[in-house]
Image 1 (cartoon, protein in one colour):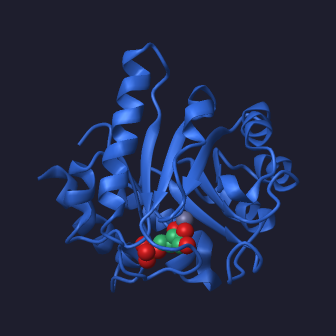
Image 2 (cartoon, rainbow, N blue to C red; image 1 turned 120 degrees about the horizontal axis):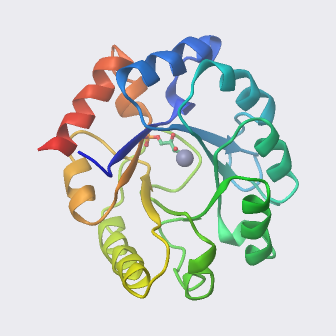
Length: 224
Ligand code: DX5
Ligand code: ZN
């Protein structure tokens, strides 16, 4: 299905063989690599930084979608840009100057996005639509893979879809609408119908006995 993208999250991959894992998922047809950065401050977990991004970069050609669950944000942007990130998203409440942080991401040659937790209001969108390449809605509270999708995300998705469509109708740039957390074979189609075009899937892909198979199974739901 054109215009639809799957972004496997390597949070659920085998960290002892990340190079092989990302190569395999690109070969399976993945559109993006979703890269979860957690700092044990903004979220209660600790994952990986720019050095790991740099290490996997030579193994794939598809874009690396860096999801920053860190506070503060700005100092990491040049480091991730240098490490080969293509998309950088952050949570608005984790940056003191959201407009500046969005500019900083684009100035470093990356596509910029904001991430909204399940209970974070969308108000900031009133002021920064022109600076966004992507909007990411969390389907879970951030910090861990393998959590259950929070159903109110569907209502929020429809609201963001309407905002993006109105923005484009008024001559604005297109903005991807990504969903992250709890995306599975049994709900991805409903999430698509609510307006998403980009789907992060961690445990659904890398938790499957074979990541290739996990990817294909979930991708097939988008084609129906
Ligand atoms: C959660 C991360 C997600 C996570 C999703 O805080 O941002 O990207 O990897 O994992 P699943 O798909 O298993 O919910
Ligand atoms: Zn994520």
